[in-house]
Image (cartoon, helix red, strand yellow):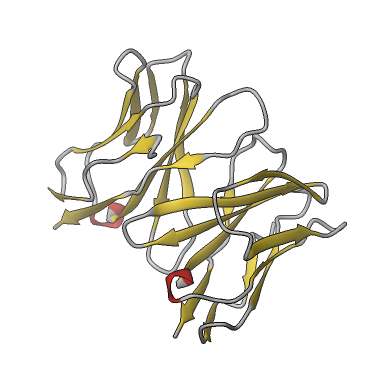
Length: 112
Length: 113
C-alpha cells in the first residue's frame, strides 16, 4: 500500500510569492490534515479536510488556504510568502477523521 | 497556549539504559494520547497510543504510562538502542467529536552507543 505522497519535497521561494503544495493520501483514506513544523514549535495544525469539506482550521492567517478534491487529494496554498513561513509542511491522512494519522515526508519550504 | 507540553527539548541516554520521555497536558477533555517518532527528512510515524480508560499500554520495548490526575504521560523505552535516536512527539485529542490532534513541541532523544 503506497504511503502519503507530498510534492514537491523541497522548494525555495522569495517573499511575496505564493506556493502550492500537494498531498496524495493513502488509498481509501478520506481525511487529510496539514501541519506546519518549525524548529522549537513542534507540529502546528493548519487544517483538516474530510470528503472535500474543511472540518477544522488552525490558528493561521488567511494567507494559508487549502482544498480537497473528490479523489481525496489535497492542496494547500500560501500567498504573499513571509520569511517566517519557512518550515516543513506535513500532510497526514487517515481513514476517518478521528483515526490514526499517517504522515508524508513533508515539503520543505524556504522563503528568502 | 500550549495544551500539550514536552518540557525537555532533548535527552541523551546510554545504549541499553531506559529512556523516559515526559508529556504534560492541560486540556481535561483530552482522553486519547499518542506518541509519534520522527527521523530527519522523514514524516512522523505512529509509535504507541493510550486511551484514558487505561493507565498503561505496552508494545515491545515501548511502554506509555498515563496519570490522569496529574495530566501527565510518559514514554519508556527499554532497552534504548541507537536506532531510537529521533524526535518524539506527544499528541492528544478528545475521543469524541471531530477535533484534530494537538502535538507537543517534541523531545530529541539521542541514544549513545
